Amino acid sequence: MAIVEVKVPQLSESVAEATMLTWKKKAGEAVAVDEILIEIETDKVVLEVPAPAAGVLAEIVQGDGATVVAEQLIARIDTEGKAGAAAPAAAAPAAAAAPAAAVAVAAAATGGSKADVAMPAAAKLLADNNLSVSAVAGTGKDGRVTKGDVLAAVAGGVKSTAAVIPTGVPTKALAQVAAPSSALNLGDRPEQRVPMSRLRARVAERLLQSQSTNAILTTFNEVNMAPVMELRKKFQDQFTKEHGTKLGFMSFFVKAAVHALKKYPVLNASVDGNDIVYHGYFDIGIAVGSPRGLVVPILRNADQMSFADIEKKIAEFGKKAGEGKLGIEEMTGGTFSISNGGTFGSMMSTPIINPPQSAILGVHATKDRAMVENGQVVVRPMNYLAMSYDHRIIDGREAVLGLVAMKDALEDPSRLLFDI
Image (tube, rainbow, N blue to C red):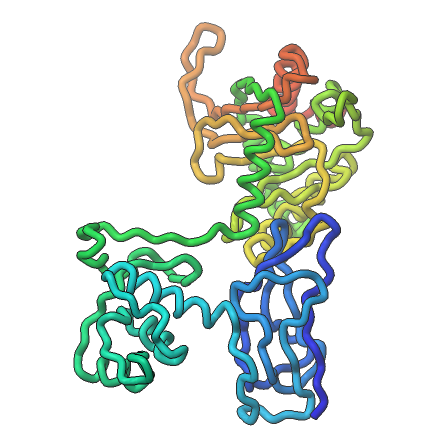
């Protein structure tokens, strides 16, 4: 037998620990070299753990939901083993804990006291069948509930009494939650409690940090998107044919933002203690929604990127975010951010600054609105822009003029060509 160890990948310096997600293979199953065995979530990214060698997954040392650190042993592969021949050498700690937690909660809900007298195999069966430990008579030593007791109870038609979804027990949807126990007096109003993912917890921490450390103020303006829309319509087919990607709105917003940041450098600055750090580069963060939460990948040197470069990179970010494959280096840094709530139909919002940046642009849905031009009411496709800024270093003048510069660039895109 030749054993190869599977360990947690090296984490970034700012990440102390990570959470195991779901194993894609079971102990005893064959694995191919570089086949993804499990994903590990940090507070920034999700890392894939590939198999370092081909063989059979002989042992899972750390189960789903376990907290691990860099270089920690999580599994072993037998490079000479045969599929089906190996049995799980060690029970996955987190996986075993979930059924036990389910039994404990169910017992507490029904006033039972057997939460600690169900054998491990029995506890799993109880959880799988939504049964309370108090609903099954134990025949084992000291009244312990055995696997046979549970099987007999299921065969005898004992009804489900479990009603609470315990922390750490994953479910696909709240609609699948069983009806609450009468002992909880919740009627037909089920609740589901699940722990925050590391990414969600980190987002929450940074947003609170932003609001507690920055003097956030938001200024608004409206922009007529007709010129941009006409330009897109005119060149869309040729642009797509030439660059292999569609011409969207975000590249215009990025270009307009960079245009304004060049005019008012303090919008691109950050606070470091009692110092103001002016950045001589333009790294624009693009807020992207993902299944695991909000992420903000960075467009490096956006001032040097073409419209096609920006559109391709944003499309790449969106795909990676959806697959959970954004790297730490892709989300580190940034001097200014753009959040496009308009994608989801938002009309107005006050975006929160992404520390240590000092300003963020909020873009919203473009809608036809009645506007007054030269004394006449006309219909124009309008978009409300919102820019939140740190009032400690950015005065209202720079903020308002910066947003006006973005508005002017969008309403007359030719300004972007001549940088005026």
